[in-house]
Every structure is written in C-alpha cells, then in structure tokens.
Length: 413
Image 1 (tube, helix red, strand yellow):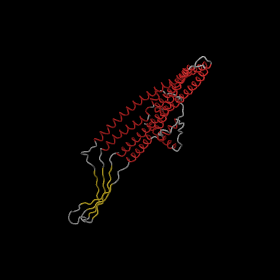
Image 2: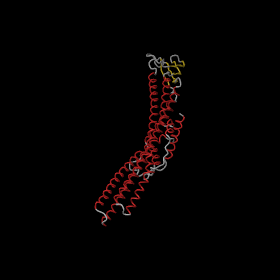
Image 3: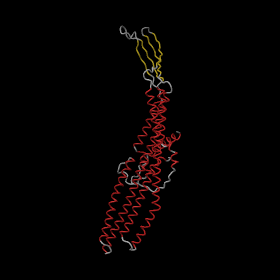
C-alpha cells in the first residue's frame, strides 16, 4: 500500500506540472514530436479532465462524510384545549435537538470515502498511461506512413529517371519500344503506390490529431525516429513491479474501500441517539419549566441486515476483481514483452544483415549498368527489391514502437 500511495503522489505532482505547462505555446503541428503530442494530450484530453473532476468530487465526499449532524430547532404548542382559551391555556416548548451517532460511524464513513478517492486517483493514473499508449501507437503509425511515403516518392523519382533515360536511348536507337513501355509501366505503378501511401499518411495524421484532441487538419507532419535504441527490461523485473501498477493500486484501494464499507454497515446497524433540551412555558399557571429527553429507534423491522449483505457481496466482488486484474496484467505483460522482443529482433536483423547486403547489390548493379553490362530493367528490379526491404525495415521499426507503447505502462516512471 506504501508503493500505491507513492504512485498517487507522483500522479498528483504530474497534474501540477501539467497545469504549469498549460501556459506554454501550442506544439508545432507542422513537425509534431512525440513529446509534444503527449504533452498536448495530457492538457486537453477529455478523459483526463473527467478523471480529475471525479477525484475532486470524491474529495468533497470525504469532507462531507466527517461532518457532524446539524442540530434541530424545536417549537411546539402542547395541551391546547379545543374549547375556551386555546392559546391561553396551552403549553409552549422551544429548544434544540441533536442526533448523536453512536459508535465510530463518522470515522468509518470518512475512511470509506477516502479510500474511494484513492481508487479514483489510481484510475486516473491508469487512464493517463492508457492515453500515453494510444498516443505513442498513433504516432508510430503516422511516422511510419510519413517515411513510407517518402520512400515511395524516391521510387517515383527513380522511375521517372528511368523513363527519361529510356526515351533518350530510344531516340538514339539503343532501345526498343517495349523497353519504354516497361519503364512507363514501372512509373505508373510507383505513382499509384505513392498516392495510396499519401492517403494512408493523411489518414494516420488525422487519427493522431483525434487522439491528442486536435482538429483533423491541424497536424500536418510528425518528426522523430523509428529507429530509437531500446533496452528491453527483464520480464521478471517487470513482473515484480506489477503491484505498483495503477490498475492494481486501484483494485486494491477498491477492495479496502469495500472492506471498510462492511465495517460501516455494521456500525450503521446501531441506532442513533437523539437528545432534546426544551424551554417549557405553562400558560395556564404562568410558570416556566424545562424538558430534557432522549430517544432512540427500536430496531424491530429495519435492522440493517440488507445493507450488510450488500456490503459483504461488494467486498467479495472487489476481491474477485483484484485477482482478475492481477491475472490480466500478468498476461498483458508477457504478451507485450514477447511482441517487443520479436519486433526488435526483426528490426535488428534487417538493419545489420539484410539492408547492407541489399545496398551492396544495388551499388554493384548500378555500376555494371553504367559500364553497359546490364540493362535498365535489371537495375529497376534491384532498386525495387531494395525498396521492399527498406519498407519491411520501416514496418519492423513501427511494430517495435507499437510493442514498446504496449509495454511502457509496465515500466517505472
């Protein structure tokens, strides 16, 4: 529980830091970085605004739970006869009454509400981590689509150069019309792939804008590196830290609140004591007196058994949710760790083994083409092959960032 309170303190300090950054300028939407996207989402996303409001509402309930009952003002006319001088022969009483809760009901109620406030605070921290995961995932897709679009553009430029060279060769008599038709088909294919990549790039930017709370057309580009060096923590170390995860902390606080609710339901079965102190004016004899009285409900019909059964059932449900949360977190952690390990392995294999060899093949092919040993079609084929490998490398880096975003909520802040 000490670690859970430490996490709640860290989340509250993060809220204060976010409030300070609200006075800063908006992020550059022409070249949005991941840090800017995360900062903007934290300041503006409605899920976090709602979570903060719920925490403040719970603070109000904590304050209200510890308040003593208000005294009651009492004024009565008694023994008033139907006939004769009704008001002159009646008795008049004025005074105060106060309800005195027996047991430690206010302390128990305050503890229940305070634990519920902690639960909402932990849930707010979980929403923040989930928002970070979504933003990082959308940013990775947008960055991949932007770099893939740039690579498709390079292929279009290469195909255009091929068309120009082939036309010149055809005019000089060194090529035949079928050679020109082939490179023109290559150019048409490259242009179609670029248009599709451009559409997917714009869709990815729109999705990123929606995730961070900006209008769809505000983010026009992203800036960053898909090839960020990552060090995968050991699975055992991550599993040992699951107890401080906000989802576990929230489930634990919920169970504690439900257990406190059982204690409160038991205390609420004790009836409240009501005391009265009254000034008594006896008009018939022109005398002053006072009355003192106490009353307490007799628990004949309502003994609070239903509330106690409800509180015990809610406690059992919270305990089951805690076990389920622990199981789900362990499962998500293993899956995310495995995905990141596989994606990072693929990316490193392509980077260190495949891409250098494909570059060497392309350079050798272009040198042989310049020397007249190969035709342009063979060169374009090699270039397409290298471009395909570069796209696979970008996909591997994208998958790595997506897997890292899945694993990030399990890491220490």
